[in-house]
Length: 260
Ligand SMILES: Cc1cc2nc3c(=O)[nH]c(=O)nc-3n(C[C@H](O)[C@H](O)[C@H](O)COP(=O)(O)OP(=O)(O)OC[C@H]3O[C@@H](n4cnc5c(N)ncnc54)[C@H](O)[C@@H]3O)c2cc1C
Ligand code: FES
Image 1: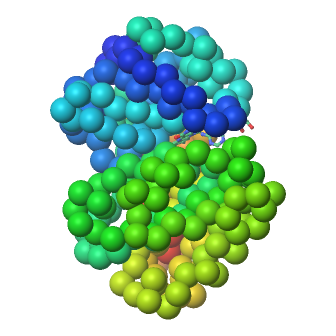
Image 2: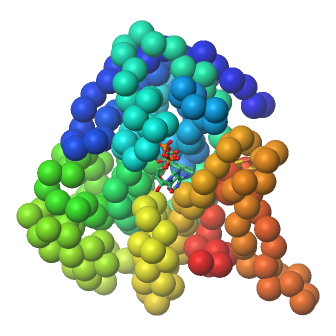
């Protein structure tokens, strides 16, 4: 059931340049959220802003999101102090499916690491082995390095600047995986669209099931405004595609369904 919560900010932690982890008190979201789901967070502007859920603490009744400042809304959210109260809708959308998943290769770019961190945490708790491949612009932009290493059997970092891990993108990092790393793996990808498209093609070549989290501009976040509509392949005769709402049917989709 869709519910709007008044949630207090209980912790604010700087992670790296422009990236801040915000922790909120909200028992329902902490207990109900699944990896890949998101919350819509109020700011001083008209529309709430969507953020993937990064961590949950169902005992302490808190959850967190990682926010990167890109414009007025995120700037405003990041000026908040501990104790400030936000209106938050969530948990929203459909997250990653763990059905039949035996091993995860989590591939993240930029803020994509936030929802993937939650997925890695769930995988660890379920005893599902995981490999983590994360791309950053440079060492200065990097965060969650030791956290991802803790939750993964193997971690490979890539940076455009070449000052952290492999020089290049996550595509260069994926080349370092061994054939046995790919056995029985399902790929979870969150990051810029061009990166997700390339990783999906890589997964297809290696005959791996792949789930991607699409990041569309959103308004309502729960399926009524149609701002976030995108095209998904259709099985129906004479219909190459059908429309879905990224916020409601997604944001996570099977990569094989997505029309990029
Ligand atoms: C399902 C989902 C999960 C997300 N998870 C996170 C997260 O975990 N951490 C995080 O920092 N951000 C995340 N985002 C992106 C975040 O919602 C946007 O950065 C934010 O809404 C921008 O608001 P703004 O007012 O600061 O920027 P605006 O002034 O509205 O825009 C500034 C710039 O950001 C771009 N932008 C704005 N909204 C989006 C969007 N939805 N997708 C892609 N580009 C956008 C604009 O095109 C523009 O270039 C997520 C988005 C979605 C849809
Ligand atoms: S954001 Fe309104 S329908 Fe998706």
